[in-house]
Length: 169
Image (tube, rainbow, N blue to C red; front, side, top):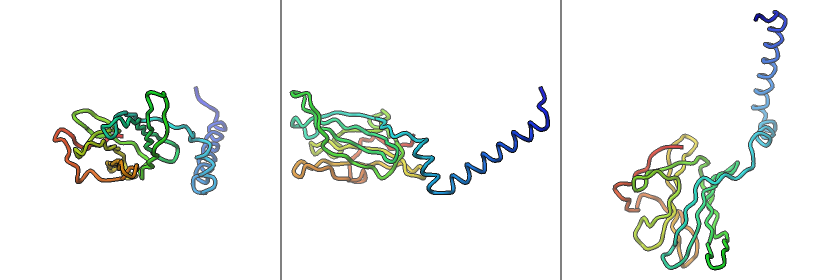
């Protein structure tokens, strides 16, 4: 089926106008923000969840990796099994916004709660990707005395030979 020549020109003209409007909107910061606000949802997406005894002394926690519109966050909740309650202990905002994964003990994961340095306290290992898609591994160590999570690095932690960092996304 062949369209009339005027209809072809009308479709082409319409597409050109849409292209110009989208280009103008993407260049202007206020219009770009308006498009983001209306096209990207505010929903929280749970990417991963792990639970464990943080200190080995009955300090049960649930660690959740969450993606929002603007950030990637690790939330640590205290679990009170006897009371059937949870409470937010810490909210750790990651510097990158892209989820990642790594191989840990032969299994891919994007969040791990494990004692990497054999001190009896579990660390939170969180892989991400930066804007250049370079993988990062953030390790948070819990300090029971100060009751805070401290960002450390994987460089000084003895890793299992079966564990390795790899890309994904």
